[in-house]
Image (tube, rainbow, N blue to C red; front, side):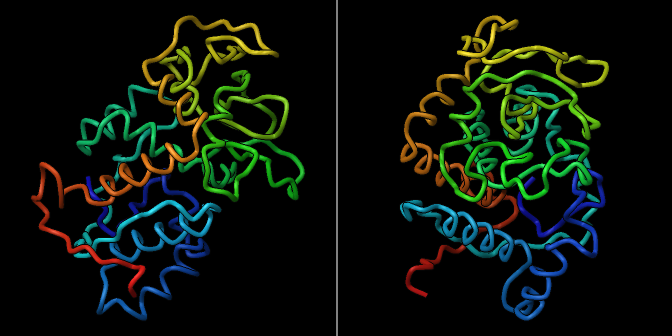
Length: 272
């Protein structure tokens, strides 16, 4: 379950696999110029590092780069290995812990990448209709162009489960145009998921601990709430933890307890 330079044809990758996507119109042409020097898997890992560091304003996050990943020639071999955003903590355990050999702490930390970007209804079915010039529309937090801990602070604000206008799948919504998915909300409160549809129960409110604008219908708190709260309080703690978990994720199969895919070589990008 390591990075292999592949995108399966699964609908889970909608928005990435089309010929008009930025993967094919921006990234692929760059990689083709150097495909004899770097694998696609290494190149994508490098692009991710650059994107994170460029959108992190304090410039304190340090993401080491390793090369030597092998590209998979059968990209559809990875179909079905992505986590469902509807199934909550159980799916995080299945994919990140059981399949990838990471920890639930890593999973909670890595979902912090939702601090940048948006969901897109046309690709995933998740999203609300609204003003296309609204940069907060269908973003997870109020700074979708900044890599920071705002995502965790956003989780701890009041949310209501709903299927809003324009969406075909369950979302968590609140006063502004931001959104959350079940996977996000499950880290902050014990949400109830309709097992027949894998949707959150309509009208359910979070967080479990209450909030200024909500009367919670959920009870108790998940074990991950303490970690979410700690990241919400400290951007530096989140950035440090993310660097560690990101490195573990991008070297699955090459480091730690499993080196079945081979070994990687580290390089200091600052010296390049």
